[in-house]
Image (cartoon, rainbow, N blue to C red):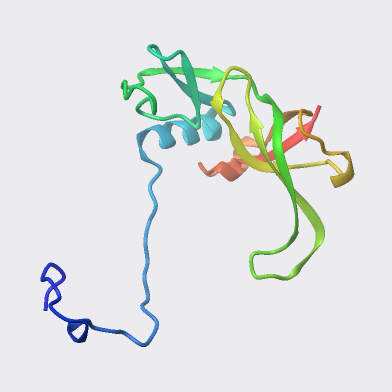
Length: 157
């Protein structure tokens, strides 16, 4: 039975009792590539602007989510922002206790619709608060690889 054939009864369904090894590759698309290249090559944050809605998207998008206008205007945004919300992580993805807690925050950049989720660096959990001002910390240019991790995180200003 092929994938497009309709099942007539439950007995027609096939079951696999084992692991299915899957590999996939995620591509960031045109807007994501330009965004990451700007971080890697120039150490700047880019957004796209919707002329109809007057919104600046970060991360950038190729189309406005409100009016579906194609977004062709790119702007450089300040490398500073405001903590919109945050969480303190005390366990790794595999459930092991971390030696030091990590602080993850959603940072809104001035004038941008959206923002970036990233680590807060050089901040103690007890000192973090919503509304605190932070700035981007980039890796040194020779260490950048073209990923969001070319941003080390945000540090309090």
